[in-house]
Length: 149
Length: 90
Image 1 (cartoon, each protein chain N blue to C red):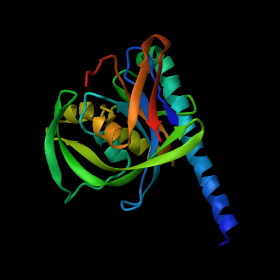
Image 2 (image 1 turned 90 degrees about the horizontal axis):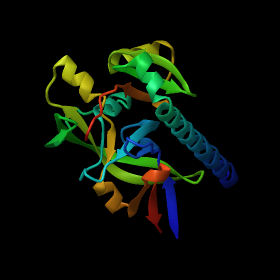
Image 3 (image 1 turned 180 degrees about the horizontal axis):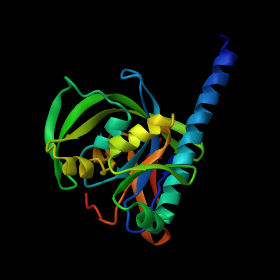
Image 4 (image 1 turned 120 degrees about the horizontal axis):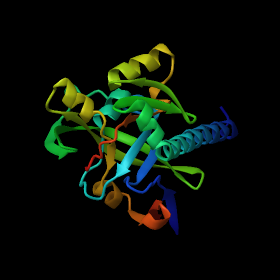
């Protein structure tokens, strides 16, 4: 059976998903996060702003690679398993995913402000791992993720 | 705690999660629909939205978070956006 997760989608903007993120290990209570669904991204990560808002501790964590995103260079940093809660119709379901966070490498004030304006990204790794497909109907301003059972 | 009580608590928690997600969806839709007016008022500012209302703003995220903390508002229960006319190509 196919299940649908509705996305927020307005002409001129990418499809967006509002979800809750929770990590038992990091003691992060369910927190509202919004992801841009980006099929051009091979990876999924919390933005620098979301990392700050959720108070995800990054000290001592493994730095994975430098990524270019929104015109800036960021370090991607491995965090922990997060439960990502989404809505199918009006019911919750959650997916466990080991999330990365990102941190800008240039630290000028202007660069930091601009870097913190960028969204969290749900990329192809997430869609593939959790058997999700993306459907977009631009003329109707409709978008959804679809999951096969 | 009995199994029935436990189930009830799980259902209440799930309902709270769903409510928060629905509120976020509603606020992001409001943001998208009112973008032109928001840009006019808050261009190049970080804003926090709750129930179709901009409850706080700041020129950077740190200042916005500080203002929310002073008001006793939990930022993880609000929608935080940076308002700008600049289009970002990811």
